[in-house]
Length: 433
Image (cartoon, rainbow, N blue to C red; front, side, top):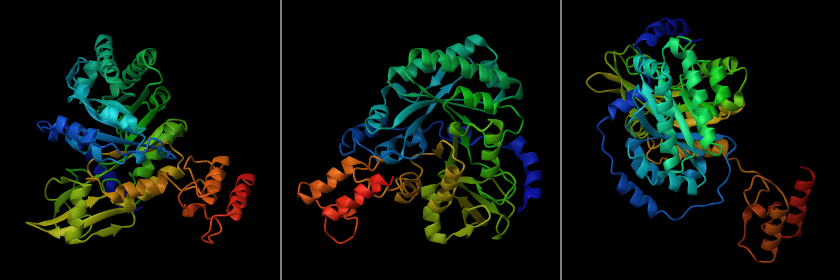
């Protein structure tokens, strides 16, 4: 496979210098101020929504970082099943140091009214801090109780745990923490949803994927940052093919290490890319500085200005342009994401995820990719309940009796009339189902 040996040696450095992207982003926006009330007031003015939303074939889970909070009224809730609000920041003693206005947000009520579950994401990054928290019973209980109180205070649906840079010696203690958390949450809530953000590659065997999958409702595989800001060459953030370490490697690794718990695996994918200064215009050129993040909306604008290239081996887009030096920006578009969604479907896993909601600035293209893959139209399902039954027959009868507007999808024989032949057509479909 292309560059597999090169990437293998690069990954020896990668595991030492790599920074988890969620941590990088949280630090980047540490002092970012958001007008929560303005966003909530705008959301309260949104009254048009379909309470009888379509049901997606798989889970679609998106992280909503607090710095993108003003985007939540614009999301397509018909194409989401869960939102993880990012985040409630823990310290090593289990105290909440910043919940980013969680208890005052209108988000939970707004999303739940549209059929989307909302979970609070809890974050703690770094070996030392995680070691202190996980190694102490009282600190673990403090964290669990604080998170439970926050979730219950607003009637949210559960919690997502995002602990990164886990030390190897805390492997068993993380399992213990999740067992304790699951017990307390289930004791106090009806059917809470408990998920975790987990690494694309477990470099030091610190994660007991099998035990964690059994305890939780899902492991959100962070299928991005394979190439990162400090990479020695430019390359795809989320490759599907072309490299030894890629999405296929990660998903297969999880399947093997969880003993095939497919229903617990979620493939997280990026709505961002990196823009590196490089030594030349040639694909995968050596970087001459750190890469800067580009959200999908930013990269899309760049592609309009400079054009773009398709890297077939990795199923990724990349842009080359000349600034003070040559630059290469690698990112995912609707096509590359669609291929990765198809991969998740073929692997029969629970679903897919997004980092991060708002990074597309409401692009119809990215929502369209989700719709095409996870909201297929079932021919004959006129009331969009994912079944072909007597209710659909009644709709056609109402069409014939002029009790409902003309519905082209009810014209099964395409003769531009709704009549008895269409009723016979749908009855035939029901009998042959």
